[in-house]
Length: 338
Image 1 (cartoon, rainbow, N blue to C red):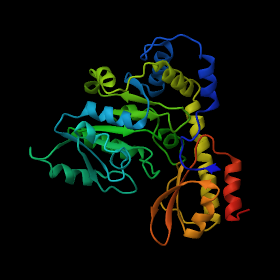
Image 2 (image 1 turned 180 degrees about the vertical axis):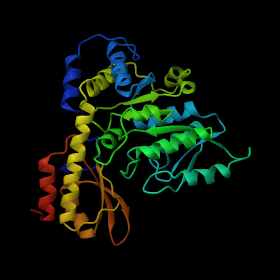
Image 3 (image 1 turned 60 degrees about the vertical axis):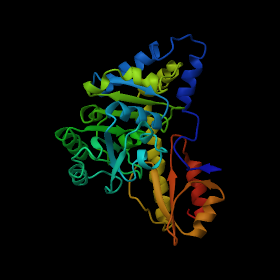
Image 4 (image 1 turned 45 degrees about the vertical axis):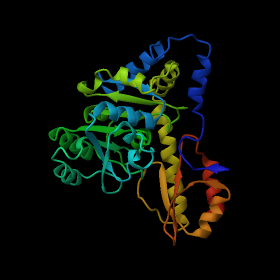
């Protein structure tokens, strides 16, 4: 079957698989003390123009959990939009550390400063948790993007109000590759306290690169990483993965494939008079399908039923590094588009 279910449904890009095979028998020091990890960190620091600390973790949920645990005291909380990944798709991982997730409505999947202001005004005494961090993701849970101005405004607001800004970059690759993006890669090291570069959803077999910019947050993070089960014994595997992703800008090239085919997929739906639900130009395509069309596509295409609205079903189609012309042709064939 053709799969538009998610952007992590293949093992890895061929370049990464080749690199892992190349170093398969090479002995390495464990726990990320190896040459590959050190080299990957050096490459990323150069591309980001930063002296930030960089760590490689296995996946997005544990990265979010450990990062926010580092930021927050026991009585402190993190703020995100209602659709934020830490609120709706991580099984209470952040809250399992004892930290409340406070939500605001937001718009188009993005946080609004005025709503955060209102929330802060409602948390002014010691009978309520104290907000200490703002969480955003780029791209967002519904594929939308923050502009550079929005990122800077949120960052400045956070610091003016004694808050940290954490950016979930699980889909940072497609955010950077999007035609409407105006945020440079290095901007994330300027306008956040901590962020991560998602590998799992952009060509890596697994792995995220956590970048700790704020000096205060760097202290003893390596202890927390080990304590919370985030430190890989075979850390050199992650080192090889990120070394390969960034030494020749493979990361950005792979993301462009996802963007290219998402654009083509939108054109197919447009020709079929299928309405797009959440307008974006990243790799998540949300459309309204009537039950007949939903059932027809479901026979041969894997995709996600996002929300049943009764008269139509909001469905999510996700392109990835392996999406190709044949995948698009199959959708066209089913929908009767030439």
